[in-house]
Length: 132
Image 1 (cartoon, rainbow, N blue to C red):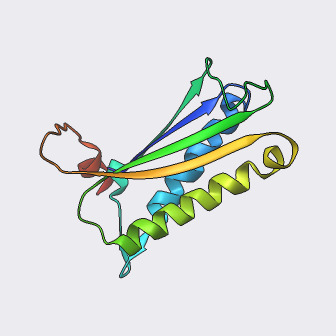
Image 2 (image 1 turned 90 degrees about the horizontal axis):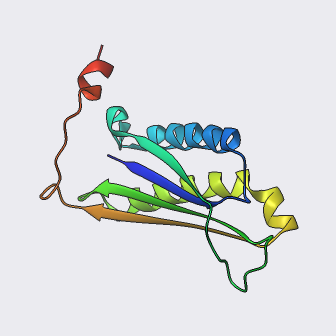
């Protein structure tokens, strides 16, 4: 972990642009530090974007758009760390869609969800491969 999922309306951006945003958001997660240490293990970072073809926003106007980001992280991090992560991610998202925000109806949102390790299953060799 962390896993960041973006859901966005099909009228918001092209897949290449969203792919670039995914990379930037992954780099943003990797850049998070507490006491000089990585907050999130590099091998656990995942960012994905899911284009929503079917949606209705507010009153149904066709130019209205949205992007919702949902960050899932393991429990136990300090509130200040979670806030710093959320602030950094949301600032990046707002920056990347500033032009759209000026010219059309746009709803941007981010939430952070913590979960306990109980009830999760993982099989991952990325951590070991990245140590080299």
